[in-house]
Length: 266
Image 1 (cartoon, rainbow, N blue to C red):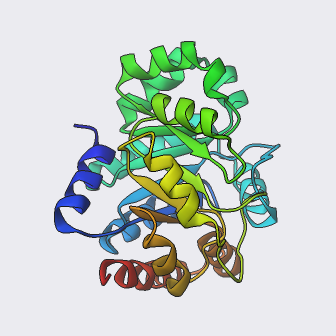
Image 2: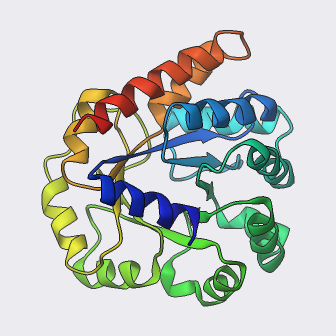
C-alpha cells in the first residue's frame, strides 16, 4: 500500500483528521527543507507537500510565489529536490507529495521523472496545470511507477467534471476551498460543506481541504467537512520571516505542532 493510502487508512481507523503541510522546497535552501520535513514528522504531520520551485507558479499567491523565487535563488532544481527526498527517506517514512507544474516534468522527461520520483520515495504528484482530460500518458507512467496522481477540485468545478476528476485521482482529492490562488485568509468559505458532499457523491477517496487555512481554529472548522486540511501559505510565511536562522525549525515546527494538536483533538 502506498504511504498516502496507508496514512489515510490509519486516520480513518482512529477516527482522526489529517494534517497536510505544504512548503516550498529549497526555501531558504534544501538542507533546511530536509530538516523541516523531519521536524514535521516529529510533530505528527500526516502528509508533506513539497513545492518544486518554478518561475511561473500560476496557481500560487504572493507568499508561495516568493518562496518559489527564494528556492530558485538558492539553486534548487527538480533533481536537487529528488535527492533531498532520498535523504529524508533515510530517517522518515512521512508520505510525500510533489506540488509541481507540468513544464518541469516535461523538461525533465515524463517517464524519467516519475521513475526517479518513485525511486527517491515520492508517494504522489499534484500537477497544478495538467487537466485530467490530457493526462493519459501521464497516468500510464504514474501507474507503472506506483506514484499516485492527485487532483484539485475547485468551488467552480461543474458536476460532470467533478465526476471525471474523482475517477482519475488517487490517494486523496485536494479540494480548493475558495476561488483564486493560494494565500492566507481571515475566514473560511461558506460553501465547503456543499462542495464536499458533491465530491463524496462521486468517490470514496479522502478529501483534503486547503487554500487559505491560516490558524488552528480555521483548521478545525474546515476539518469537520473533510478528512484532512492543507496548510501552506501560513507556514511558508513563517519560513520567510525566520529565514536561515537558528530559530527556523522550532518556530515553524511549533506552529505546525499546535495546528496538528488542534486537529487530532477533534
